[in-house]
Length: 313
Image 1: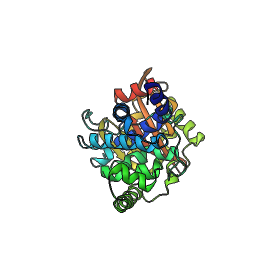
Image 2: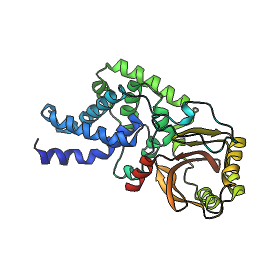
Image 3: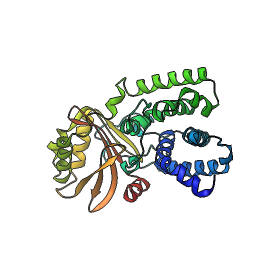
Image 4: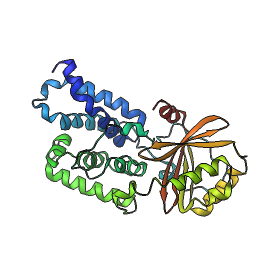
């Protein structure tokens, strides 16, 4: 396969490979490096691809093993709620940043363009990139994560997954069973379609935009779900439950005047998100999950690298 033929053949799969590496690693920045590593490995081994129609499983096997090598060298990605107890709402301002923690990172919706899933996949595209799903994946062992993603997200056959992981079909089935059970437990046994359902309630999102722009505490309080979580990476501070979130936002809004802050709608991980601007400067990227007409999860990513990623698209 000559250079031009190879590039043309892999081009339609690049977007899907990037999302696969992102799900495996929980890092939007590392995923690009893994795609480059995958394509370099594939180019060097191109003579071993006997059947060009098997390009997809062949590339995903290489990408998965590249990610498994990387996972063997570092800690799993986390949200603050994965590493410590929640903080009382009166603990304001948030604790100092822990910049060297392996924080879970969001991904821009631009990455979803042209990245289609196989019809045999268990999850549709937006479910498979929801931040809650990517966070849940990180609690799996690397082998469980790989098996679940290759089978239920990429849509490879059981035989193809076994080949990719150099396991027997029986071993893959056992690994996959444990992975599915762990994911179900992590997301409170809700149906997979819940990742993408009721997440585009325009009225709720408009109320949030208004609450921030007008520094309207009552409007913000009306959006707080009984089980709301607010996280603020790279700060380890996270707030759980209605009472503590109400107190946290009460103290935050007390420092604001109308016009001090604003949010601009964007897509984050296939779900509602916002650019958060303060004093005319883009300060953070927010990912929201809505439930029952309120904000159930609000992740306020303040890392400059995450802000830069969304700026560039």
